[in-house]
Length: 186
Image (cartoon, rainbow, N blue to C red; front, side, top):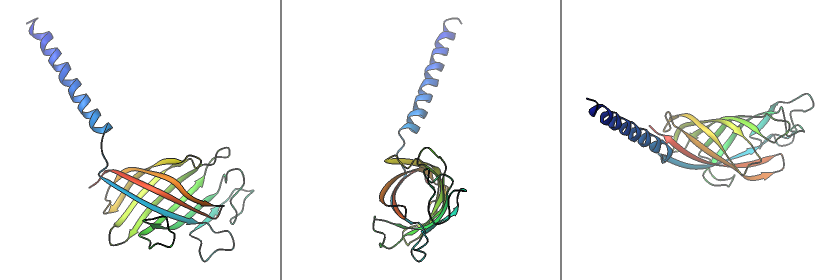
């Protein structure tokens, strides 16, 4: 009995190790089930461009106003947007949907924002929506935010969206390249 017990314990321990490593490696090296790239174009209302604006300041700190982003890294500004989404970086390309949501400039000492938005698709290729949330440290070349769900073609999707600023024209226009990797697809 004493000889059988250590051997069975050893086999059990090796079995647990194999299970642990197979589960860990499966999650660590998972490939995306879907990979998409879109561009969204944000034109902020500046008091003179109401016809073309796709976003507006709806909240400002005491020292700010609703037509000019506040000083101190825009801290305290809340901006809502309804931006066109395109497949390439041309603002005048046919939109495949809209990026709808908000961003909050949330730090005084660093240029950063917090985002919550959806891509609402209206093309023949994609139907439904993808939902995003997360911190956006704007000074980083690339930054990741979470894909936290979706509807239609993207029902219950989860993954990562890597944002990069593709174009910046003063405080009025910016374009974000959104590289989406979904790891849960239904």
